Image 1 (cartoon, rainbow, N blue to C red):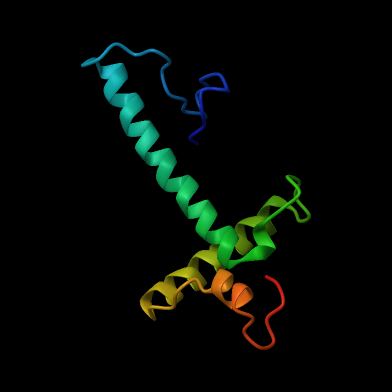
Image 2: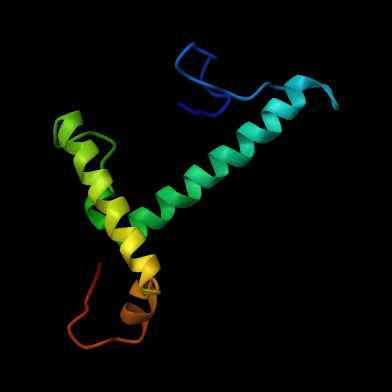
Length: 104
């Protein structure tokens, strides 16, 4: 699991090195870690924009198994949307008042 530097490094939690010296293995690890975490954060933003059922109050309404199934279903549906070239239009639909769309 990837996390930011606000958490301590654990066997199950990978965090970046703070103040890693340039051109060291630690700096290369931190750069790779940051790129990977940025991808994950962008994907979280896309999922939250497309599937409001996963925007939360920072607590689980369902048991972790069910949450995993919900996330997997969202990933599958997202991949279908990408394959079908469907765009995220929620902001435009709300901003320009598409009939029948009041909020997402």
